[in-house]
Length: 395
Ligand code: AMP
Ligand code: MG
Image 1: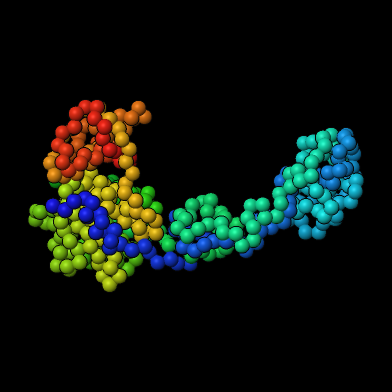
Image 2: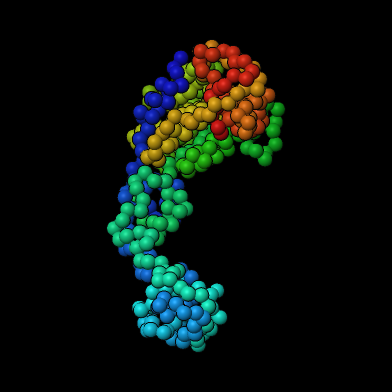
């Protein structure tokens, strides 16, 4: 059997970062910046007021209280400004440009709020409540480095330096296909022998949580020809494909039957539990990666976390680091098969303990839904006593 680490290493050696594209701001959320972003101008571009108040010469407000005539009124966006001469004040709003001559802003709270003249009852220091040009960013300064994931704040600075488009690796488009003649869409009635398709929802959601775009293609039954047809349709728009089911040793294994003859997808046993049967390879001229995950719901989810998620990171141009683990003490004794790495479902508590959930079968979806972590049991460990420290992957 192939080890978990070898399987992951082969996947990571195959998948490539997506090519960068010029993305519109509206499409850039979640993409990975592929250029060094700098500002063409200083930000703020001009000295402006940080508060609503009065622009003055600080030296005129050293003896208080003092009453000054208000000679102008400037709002944010004002362009024609009168200079502030000695003994004058200008009413000014937040974001409005500082008039020439003024060197400080007296907040409105320190005054009587007058519009013809203003009574100021606190002294002010030079530079008070003034935002200097370039205080945030100098002209030409780098504001974001390549490899940065574009979140809301990063989108803000891209727009803030005046860019409409940015060079970035888009979020990978991942198509999720379920196989299984027994599957029925949730919401539709079940006949005997049928179950509701849950994997396609779990996997599509997991894709989205991993920062990619998930498209749920639904189920193709157990017909290899229908699967090939679906793959044909989706390959044009997919950066990766995930299938669930149809990769084990039985009959009616449509994924294995459809893809084995192509010679570009390998079906193997990986030394893990759950999730032993795994398929991985590439499809079509564009060599689109395909992850053929096992059908049991817990197996497909664990396989996603171990293999697909790091691959998606790499496609996004991010480091595909080994899944982070924390150490916790098990509250119950555990068993694990020899020669396979187990990923048991558990509830990690704030006191540093982890309680395995009841129901460790790879079909036990409800138990998975109660868990918030996976307990990793190494290949050579078969029994773990209560209180032993174990490695845990948070979900
Ligand atoms: P398979 O890998 O196709 O042999 O499926 C293994 C087990 O997982 C079977 O019990 C299937 O009914 C179940 N299964 C397969 N696909 C799904 C799915 N999309 N949703 C829920 N269970 C599934
Ligand atoms: Mg099946």
